[in-house]
Length: 408
Ligand SMILES: Cc1cc2nc3c(=O)[nH]c(=O)nc-3n(C[C@H](O)[C@H](O)[C@H](O)COP(=O)(O)OP(=O)(O)OC[C@H]3O[C@@H](n4cnc5c(N)ncnc54)[C@H](O)[C@@H]3O)c2cc1C
Image (cartoon, rainbow, N blue to C red; front, side, top):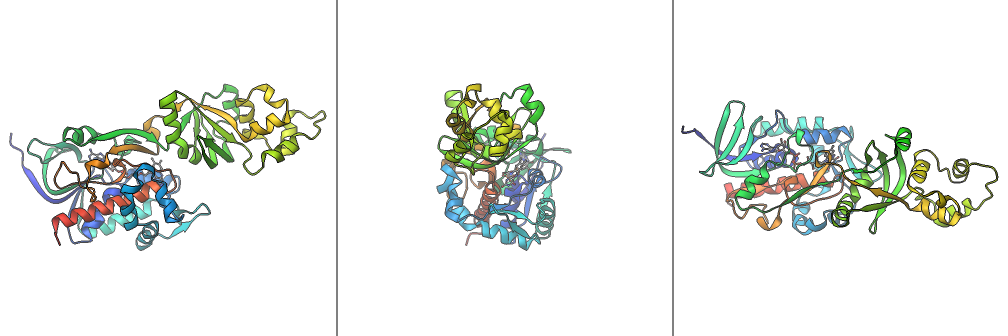
């Protein structure tokens, strides 16, 4: 049976922040856009991000900001320079969303939510020429090179003058980004670095006794260290291990160590605001008949989940001598078992390798196909960096696609 082929000018596949920003770049140049997404509605991961307080970007000095993108820093530099954290704030403000810079320099919408921003954004995009086709799952290219989609009304084929792929990574697949695009690109000669969990929690073999008392407890104001990196902050004890900002920040180093050596042990500084010498002096005071728990609480305000970690992760004889104990409190060894599954990660590393792309995020082997967002091979910690790069690469790919359609 011959199928009808629809002709579209600019097609975007994937309606997350990267795809929507690409749509903005195209529609703002008067180009109508057809955006296809597998899910019944757009921006599901973006909305999920809003549930824990949408961290849009980061206000630290721009050179430090760039450094967060590790191996992809050079590739992303011109793209991030063209749409900086300041531009992101201005963009959100222009959509009627006021922003707020926290003490950590993280930038949030004032209400911390994603839904009002997404609603305002979609309204403006639709008014400017965006047509959304939900429940359209892209299934690669048909033999004649046209785009093939599964839809509730059956398969359809689309011939696009230019295509932007913004299909996301592989975490939280139930929100849409299930990485089914990998084989389609590989089949067409695009090399993809394996998608791995990034910004993820880790399994720890907690004892039943410890979990009984501390599951769900936040560990406030600690500092986690691993292989030279020292990250302050709060983390959470979960039924299976640990989650939270400083854990995510060390995730790539921990995974590398687990992959290469089969083990990884974090050093947890339970009292980062006190020096080892101060702790040692306080522990050298006479203990009298006080229990160790009371002594630690009275002299160091060390109690609850922090004391629990100390008892859970150290040998009994660590408590015998104040010098040893002070050193242990500054670096409790916490053995990590394995990363949580990719389905639970905040983001994924790996993706479309940079050598497949020209400077315009255009795929060398597929004419008129651009790539944006988390499906590119970059990685960054939490803190607004992920959305920043998704928005900036989406905008860049959209601008470059517009140049293909309307050459200067
Ligand atoms: C719990 C959580 C909290 C987060 N919080 C933050 C935060 O506060 N700050 C921050 O910077 N980042 C945060 N992130 C990360 C951020 O949400 C992602 O990095 C970002 O959404 C990725 O954008 P994207 O457009 O590249 O992909 P996605 O948002 O994943 O969008 C991809 C789209 O493509 C569609 N798609 C995929 N495959 C197909 C197909 N075959 N056919 C059609 N459509 C398809 C999907 O349905 C989806 O709509 C968080 C992530 C999670 C999971």
